Image (tube, rainbow, N blue to C red):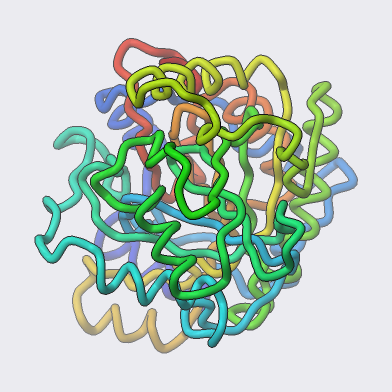
Length: 373
């Protein structure tokens, strides 16, 4: 059934062609590579756990453009790898409180319709400044706070960490006003307020893997395998790999520094620019981000009904963020792809077009890498 839906889409819209996507990415000033996304032979001649043959995954249809634009994405500490089916509806959680606060405090004025970096660039590539949505996820990292009722939140694409957030409606509002409000820059409100502490996320790269079993069991199967494989290839390249956020409490938070706001922005940028050289990666599991089933919005109605009926379009998702704030969304990621992702995207800072689902703030004119400023 997967191949049927893929063929139906191809008949209507044509096949996704990597050379065309590559050229469009180049035109949009996005660092891109022609390297193969698969590093092993086909059939595989290495010891890769090939789950793609065991799970119902569509490997044919076009997934580029399936990322829903967002201005910011937050990942909330839980210490778990599975959550309630709808994390923003789970009573008493920070995700639910933040969803409520965001609904009431977000500007009523609709932002500009997200657009591609150029008229020729593929859909699904956008700047966070052109979007208004807040993406709220739970993460597998544990809170840095000694108080069990306080959470630690990673804020993207800002590449910041906010700790000491009470798991209450008031705590969610304090977080929103300090770091999530669309009017704020990367530094947020870095004056001492509500006992929140903020740091730069101290990693060269953040890798997010969906593991949300109650949304889709396939993610629970694939995330641990991909985590192990990323760990293996990153260490092989000499990188230090963490699967939990290390304790930042020994470092002074931004709120404790007396610098004016403009100087803090410069301080943050200097820290971010230095991170790639540290060769340190953080891998976290996260809740559902959307896109496990593609809706096929551009397909005529009768084909769209077939695709929805077979419920086939599952995307094994990996999100990769760099300190500059660039976010790359890859789909249909299997262990066969990980070595190439590590070498070309995580180390080289270039996009692999054949597995690209979308991206945030990828354009960097005149630069060869997503790590360059």
